[in-house]
Every structure is written in C-alpha cells, then in structure tokens.
Length: 136
Image (cartoon, rainbow, N blue to C red):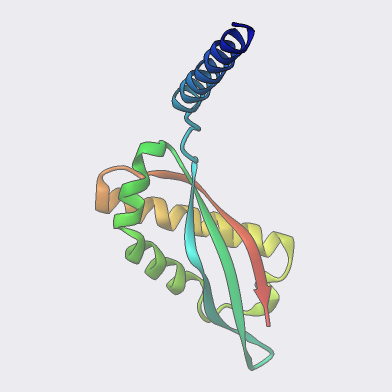
C-alpha cells in the first residue's frame, strides 16, 4: 500500500512538473530581436597611401519594428549593394578613427533609410551598427 501511494505521488509530481515546463515554454516566448544581422561580413577594397587594402565589416541594423525583419531579408541585396557602394574605395585614413567610423555609420544609416523608404514605403531601420571593423 505504501509503495502504491509513493508511486502515485511520484506520478503526480512528474505530471505536474511536465505541465509547468510546458506552460513556461509556451508563455515565455522570447521577444524577437530588434537587430537584423547582415551576414556574412562585408569585404570591400579601401586605399591606403596608394595601396589597396581590404575592409571587413560586420553590420547590424536596428529595426523600428521587429515585424519588419522579413522585409529587410527581402531587400537584403539592395541593402548590401548600397553598403558596398558606400564603403568601396574609401581612404583607410578616413575610416580608421572613431570619428571617421561614426561619420560612415551615419552616412550608412541615412542611405539605407532612403533606399528602404523608396522600396517599401517606410525606412524600416533607425540605426546601422558596425560590430566588427578590420582593415588589412
């Protein structure tokens, strides 16, 4: 009798635990990210005292609305094109400093907002962030 009672108690605890886990998993859906990653990192040529160097930059876009992420994915080729055109051929000395990177980031933000406004009817993003920036 004691064994049967212990078995029922064990089953009750097990079922209760599984229900709590299922409820927690369903109710704690993590919010979608407000950031859209442009992967893989972009690589473009920059000049450095007449020599060609490579700039590799990882870019994140901050969305106005997380529901717009599919639109960014759809227009990713246009976004990448605009960034390649903006970054290519830059003078390395002009983008090495913090001020140079910040100026470039502001330019990228404005260009992408304009491009997305023309393509989708709304700018979709409010900022561009460089999460890695390497000149070799």
